[in-house]
Length: 223
Image (cartoon, rainbow, N blue to C red; front, side, top):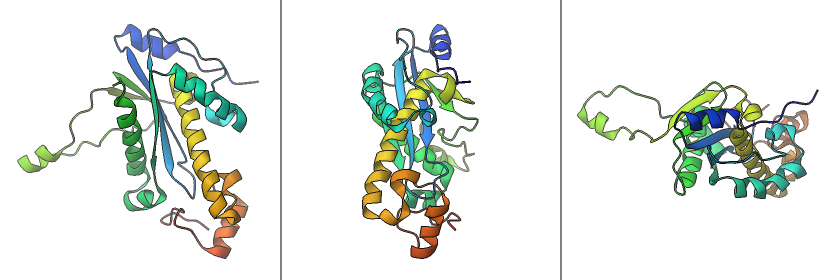
């Protein structure tokens, strides 16, 4: 039985609560052995945006269908962006902090056009918000990042139920896949044009034979 298409139901509930500008946010590449983690953001006018036919969680769509949807999503959204954090950044700061970095880059780019009131974040972990740390002194308190102007709420399977989040997942997936396909031309032995950096048996065998590249997450167990 095919999964039901995502709808605007929750976005419209948020609009009824006074959150007119709603952002859907999703990540791709979390479990990959190589390449960046990428975060998509789609901001909509939740009270007036229409349904967008054909959009589903990016994992449920064929590549050509995802690519064909990108212009429609860009036209439908009031603002949208994709941010990335590199394999080196993942090694330097850890996966969760790298997701936050990629998300911050995407949000900054989208918010330059339109600042959302509310962010729907796929999953059950808020990796987008800056962790709260108790200030040890006045200097530490002054150095803390300013509060963001939007509210964030996680929602499990939001990429399958919320149209804004599903749209964000499509944008992130298509852009990241394009990055990996480009890198595959430089490093054809790893099969990134098909595995997108994930840990297939052939990918791991190539790492064992040739060693990791600068685009591999070297802090991870690659073999």
